[in-house]
Image 1 (tube, rainbow, N blue to C red):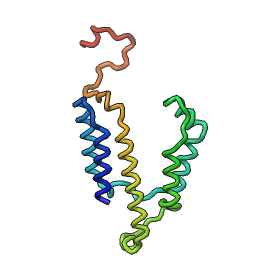
Image 2 (image 1 turned 90 degrees about the horizontal axis):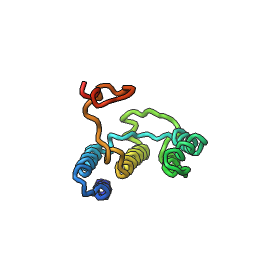
Image 3 (image 1 turned 120 degrees about the vertical axis):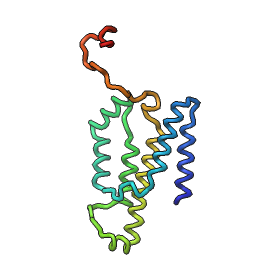
Image 4 (image 1 turned 180 degrees about the vertical axis):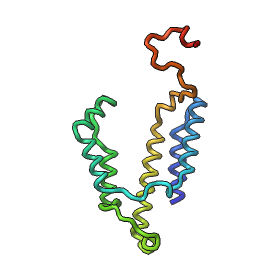
Amino acid sequence: MAKQDDTGLEKFQELFSSPDTEINQRRQDAIRTVRENDVASFPTDLSVLSAFDDVLACFALGGQIKNYYRYGTYSTCDAERKKFWFAVWNGSTTEKEMTVDKLAGDARELERRQKVQAYYKDILLQKKAEGSSEDVWQERKELLRQPYMESPSPETFNQ
């Protein structure tokens, strides 16, 4: 399992190779953060009903309009469908709390929870590999003095 994680992280790192050093540094920071998050820090439960709700919301008129507005095309809801089918095979239909002793005795439940955690980590790796607006834009370090001025002029910025 650890070997697969290392291979996945290496592939993830290759996606972030860029000639721009500043962007490269930000991406290296993201990779470092993902490496620090071990599988145990991810959720252990995935509800079939919540995954089904995500699929319905995506295929609904509002979800399609939102996707068309953002990306100029309708969505096939691949991520939501994959999550739903993963939840069908590995998720749960009820929220059940188990004691540590009971969980330690149930190898199948332990394996299921580990699969769910690995799934959430893979999803995080995929999202980080896609990049974000932070690759191009920098976070503002100082607050604007008068962010809602009606008609800004160069003189007002010096105040």
